[in-house]
Every structure is written in structure tokens, then in C-alpha cells.
Length: 587
Ligand code: C2E
Ligand code: MG
Ligand code: MG
Image 1 (cartoon, rainbow, N blue to C red):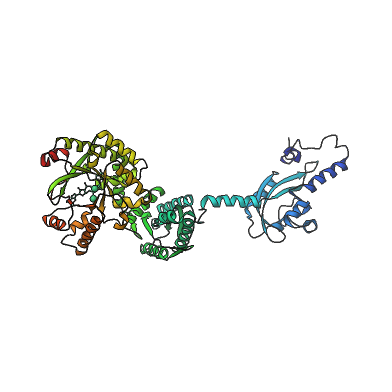
Image 2: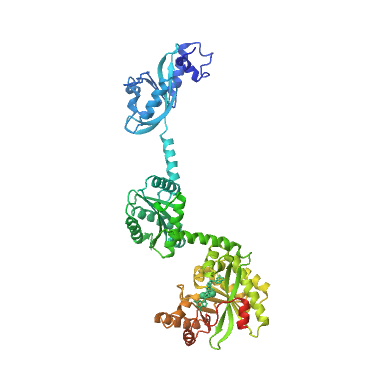
């Protein structure tokens, strides 16, 4: 039978690591050789006695690597306990494990913070082994030690980088989601614990980034991060999710007014002018808010709702906040459903083009139509383009839908042209901003016109004023190319954007449609009426004809005649209607 101590004789650990028999003839040579290896070892080596209890083992040997690592010479160490390497940050729990292992006669691997002679800290990693004599009696402990401080620091940096945003130094998305999960769990366990999640999106970041460049954009974000940090309490946590999106967890919310205090502070800190090199810029944020006590199961749901509330805040204008409510959720779900349905609407043939008459004001006769799209939803009935066109825009579906409208309206125009007593009825077709940004738009339109074989000179594309403004550089050449196809161009909803007519003179525009709001203002808002007059005068100076939109009453009609608008469109002359009804009523 072998006792445990015999079993753990040192040669059992590494049975093959013995000197070759050719060298083991002279005992002293053998000892010298091994001693030289120990002295020149790169790892520090310490041999101690076996006293585990107070005052601890005594050092009987240290090698030069130990002195290099700790600053202690052999003279300073011999007879002392290795415990002099310990200090205030040394985790003493390691030592009870150590004692336990050594008492069992086992090897020990471990690490702890130790202190050099000059008082500096380092991470010491050891491997300690019990040494027995030829009779199997425990005589010493051999400790091989290594300074792993740089590895530890690299590891720490990796962990830091994994949870921090490189640009601003704030916590990042993964850190934020972890923390949010913890907070939510806490709120499930403690009824009284409520926190708020703020989702922040800057109102002007894209503009700054696009116009002043990315390095200025980076500086801007750093400064915003600093201002946001200054807006919260020490217990609240701020993170950057990416881009210009930030989140704040407002901890321990015992008073709801705390939220508005924080959002007010954020807005007022952001409103201070910000100097980026020579540029002075202003910013504000849209903030969506949701509360932990609204029955959230997961962190993701909470982020989703704060994000929805942020969109709501943005739609209210700049510098606004909105608290999430269930209606927002319904609106978002509806929108998502509409988006899915919209994807199938073309192939299900749910679209129909309606036509609204346009009248020559002088002769009071029909001169053309505007094509207006309608969506017959299988369950929801007729859906307004004001609702679904923006969705089609955002999803890009407008490209296919828009082309279908152009093709349908052109074909219809050709049909009416050949059968009607009215000659030269023109057809206005709306072109969305997204369509206008397509690089191959001209070729696409040309192909459709070619296929429909309609009279190109009768087709007018309506482009909104804001779409023109968005694509400033390319707009002019794009419009010229469209004109070269033989068609005409019209600016839609004029007066709602912020362009000055003087900027429009270079565009080859034939007609200008004054937005309906000016017509509605007739007899009600003197200032707007004046603007209407000015727009008409300037348009005429630029050789453009003017259409007044949304004419509903005789009174409005008389006024626009007085103002010399050449054309009028509105319920007074006819609602938008399908082709059959147009034929019955007007042709
Ligand atoms: P829009 O191009 O400015 O079209 C005029 C809108 O005013 C139409 O609304 C029309 O029905 C409405 N309207 C006409 N007369 C009157 C009136 O006397 N009073 C009032 N209150 N409204 C009048 P609709 O058809 O709902 O279309 C809304 C918008 O949707 C259009 O504004 C246009 O921007 C967009 N849209 C419609 N069809 C298309 C399309 O095929 N393609 C694109 N890209 N956009 C379209
Ligand atoms: Mg229009
Ligand atoms: Mg319009």
C-alpha cells in the first residue's frame, strides 16, 4: 500500500524529467548543473520551508529572476516569509486554496496581486510544488513565479474595448443591453424599483457630418457625449449605441418629474453653441422615453418602444421628447402590416389610377388631368396616398409602383387622345423624391413613353419643391435630360419648401403648382394671399404657367382668376375619379 505522501513524490509529477544516466555518475556535478539551470531560469524561483501556518514558510532560496521581478535580493529574502510580497490589494482568498492544496500534497496554480520592494503592484502567477526527499518526506515548497502584469492589462483592455465606444469613451451597445437586462430583472424582483429608458437621437447630425466631413462629425459626437454626461446624475448610465444614437438609463425613479428635469438639462446643454474649428454649430435632440413599469419582459422590447417614442418626438419637430404609449405601438404595427401588404399590392392589382381635371381659368375649359394613385386594400378598403406613398418611399417600393402609374397614365392619355373631342389633353403625373434620385430615371421614363406610344408633349411630370432642393447638384442636368425626352415639367406643392424663386430660374420648369394652403388662405389670411400674388408674378417673370391647387369655392376661383393663375384644380371642378367616371362626366 502506498501512502498519499509517497504517491505524490516529486518524480511522480514529471516522471520522465530526470537527468540522463550518463550524467548521473557524479552527484556533485549533477547538483551543479541543475543549480545553474535554476539560476539562469527566466522565471523566478523560490524555495521555502513547509511551515504553512503563521508566521508562514521561510525562504531558503531565490534565483536572480526573482530579484529582477521583485527588487528583493537574496539577502533580503532568506529567512523571511514570501508573505512580504503581499499588500492591500492582494486577494487573500487565494491563500486558503493554496494551503488546502499543499496540505493535500498537491500542486497549486494561482495568481494574485503582489508588491515589489519599491511598493509597485504586479500580477504574480505561481505554480507551487511540494518537494520530498528520498524517503518521501515533505521537505520544501518550490514556487515558480511569473510577472503577468502586461498580459493582465492587455486582457483588461480587451474587456474595456468590448464594452466601450472607441470614439466617445462612453459605454457601448453590448454594455448597455447587459445593464438594461440587469435593471429589468431588478424591477421584476422589486416592485418599488422603477427606472426610465431615454432614447436620444440628434436632430442635426447627418447634416453636420455630410456638410462638414467625418472628422468634424467625430468631434461633434465627442462634445455631445460630454454634454450628455453632464446632464445626468451619478447613478444614471449613458451609452452610445452607434451613429448619433445615445441611451440613458435613469435609475431609481421615485419621482416622474426627474425625467423632465433630465431632458430639460439635456436640451439646454445641447443648445449651447458648439465650435468645431472655425464653424459654429447648434444642435438639439429628439428623446423617446419609456418606463420599466409598463410590463416589459425583455430589454429588446423596451428599447423598441423607446425608439418608437423617439420617432414620435422627431415628428413633433426638433428638441422634443415623447413618452411611449400603447397607441404608438399600434401605429407602428399597423405601419408594418401596411408595408407588408404594400409589397404585394402591385401583383394583386390593388392599385388604380384616379384622374382629377385641370381647368383653364380664362376659357373655363378642361385642359388636362392629374393622375392620382389609389390603393384598394382587400380588407381596409380605399387607402389614401398621403398614408401609403411615404411608406412606399421609405421602403423603395415607390420605384416599381411609380413606374406602373406612369405607364398606366400614359396609356390612358393615349386612349383619351384618340377618342375624345377634346384635343391635346395633358396628363400630369407625380414623381416622388426617391424616383427623382434614380440615376437611370431618364432611360426608364423614355422606355415607358416609348411603349405607351403616347404624345410625349402632353406628359408633365410633377416634382415637389422639396425633392428638387434635396438633389441640388444633379437636379439641373436631370431636369434638362427629362425635358429633352420631349415631356414637360411642373413643380408641385410650391411654397411649402424654402426655396426662393430666384434659385428656380435655372431649372427648365414649365409650370408651377401653388400649394393648396395658399388657396385655402384666400379671404382668411392676408399675408398668405400676398404671397400667392408674389409667387404668381415671379413665376410669370420666369415664363412659367401657374396652377392653383385645391380650389373648392367660387370665391377662391374668382380670386385666382384675379391673380392671373392660368390653371386651376380642385373639388370645385371635380374630385379625382376613375377613368370610367371621367369619361362619363367630362369626355
Ligand atoms: P398632390 O400631388 O399635391 O395632389 C393633390 C392632392 O390634393 C390630391 O390628394 C387631391 O385629391 C387633393 N385635392 C385635389 N383637389 C382638392 C380640393 O379642392 N381640396 C382638397 N382639400 N384637396 C384636394 P391625394 O390624391 O390624396 O394625393 C395626395 C398626395 O399623394 C399627392 O399630392 C401626391 O403628393 C401623392 N401622390 C398621389 N398619387 C401619387 C403617385 O402616383 N405618385 C407619387 N409619387 N405621389 C402620389
Ligand atoms: Mg401632384
Ligand atoms: Mg400638390
